[in-house]
Length: 358
Ligand code: NAD
Image (cartoon, rainbow, N blue to C red; front, side, top):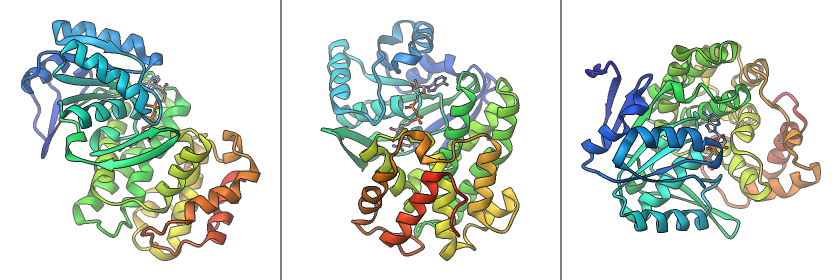
């Protein structure tokens, strides 16, 4: 990975230009110039308006306007408002500053306009590295994959994750690890996807305890961002299974928060699939210690203070039957056979915050 003149590390990754380094957010206008773009619509959430405005100000005339209404699960009505704004401004580029919700809005705009995207991630969700777009219309979330959606440039600036509260740091990191964990047993995995998955897991196994101990440690934050890139990239390259299916169901049908749900389900889904894919999941045991990947992840999450029980996210016990039904109606590839009874038992344990069932 060569060092650029500015001291930032540039990773060439096929069609995506990826730059790592403290302060790299300040190069957004230069990155637009590389893309031949002159007027960006800058996106963020209401909560991150100040950060969005600061970066837009640094971009000078290349920031044509700021749109601060990005929201979880990419509601189509928000995308339509942003599209109106983008057209009114005559924007020729999208700059997204935020987590998966803001990146999702940028991707939804790129899907409709084919404009280039520069993403400055502020969580570890990894959406910036995938050609996948999830959108919600009339309460129904659908997912598509299209090369138009894959951002052209990612600027991983560790100073942008310094403000991520510790609790979100932990859940967002576990969300990223879930992409890598499921990649290990994906039917379309390759040597390269295995390598990326292990690299991503390793970055969080060492990086998460370090950032929890010292949230302002820029070097530790930078290490976790490399993990986010590896985990996001692998999510975009190979198919996911039970874990992502369960989280999609719980988020879509019961409105549970994205990263927290991933954090709680991960040890349970991995323990479930270890019944048929123990060898594939071996790297998790190697990284975390122990003989069983699911319990090892449970101990790791508990040690970081992660939420462990779906009931603490507001899910009612009475909803578990419907959740089990929804998660098992349509068949999908999974290493261990998916039965309604076994999934109901998994959900019960995850709801109560129990040890994962092996
Ligand atoms: P998010 O983007 O919804 O952010 C959650 C909240 O944290 C927001 O209020 C946000 O403004 C705030 N926030 C983000 N970064 C912050 C920071 N550094 N400091 C302070 N506050 C900050 O959360 P997320 O978990 O990153 O994204 C979840 C969404 O991303 C979901 O809709 C999920 O489906 C999607 N996603 C998509 C993909 C994909 O490949 N398509 C991958 C992962 C996640």
